[in-house]
Length: 365
Image 1 (cartoon, rainbow, N blue to C red):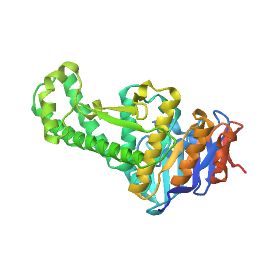
Image 2 (cartoon, rainbow, N blue to C red):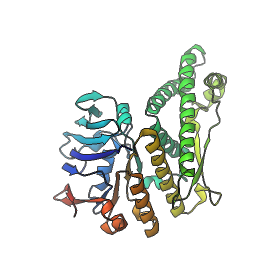
Image 3 (cartoon, one colour):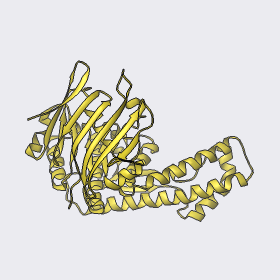
Image 4 (cartoon, one colour):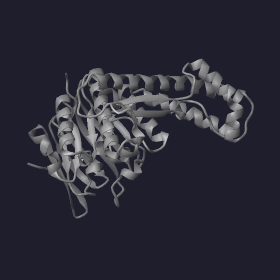
């Protein structure tokens, strides 16, 4: 199986990094440093190598280094099933970021055709106990990893829904204003629902086929909507009066929720301990990676922020074993090198240090 990895990552005026050049090989990368040194900034830059808003969902302006505010640039040399590519992501003075692949302008969705990127960050630890929006976003990121065009469907649906909601808030009752919008919503909405179910099926298969130290999660998609395009269009039309009263659209994939169960115990994920919830998330990310390795032809880049801090020594060692067996280039952060002791020479080390207000990345022995 062909690998997917970066051999070089360069950050210029990106958040705390005035200039950082990281030359690495295909092995996992352990990044250490004090809190606030700029470790997560490296992972955020890597997350921009996939479609979407990145792991912090920040604006391009927020990513620029202060006080210069000159704009920023990320350059990466990517090796994967489609060959070696140079990726440049640029924002000029806080403007929306622009993507170039091998020197040519490209849409963000093109990144999903040459690379797959998955991440797990501390804010996701509350996934099972927060609102449904976070779980939908988590599911859509997994779905996007299999189907890069899922992002376009989501944008189409959300744009049409915003326009419909504006009509609803303005109490517009004339049916002709709604017809075209509801047709677009139904077509995109049914496809979104189908894609999500496909992703869940792939995850279930990947979990069943693997022997892992992490618990299996049983996932179900809860969504009270017709799955057929025409039926969804009719439901939207029939629901207009109710939606007018609410001032918003009350049926569709934007109302879906992801339900998880700790399979071995039969306990809902939201009722599990904090450690069990974290282990379930790690399990899902690993299952997603295994499924992608079969589907895409290479395991994805894994971005794991402070993941080791919430796992005991046994599960940390198990995580590194699974990453090594998968052959994934995982970029992991931690405050101390001892967290990665079980990784041994299967990985490489970078250290982020702060000097005179600047983040610097150095290769650790």
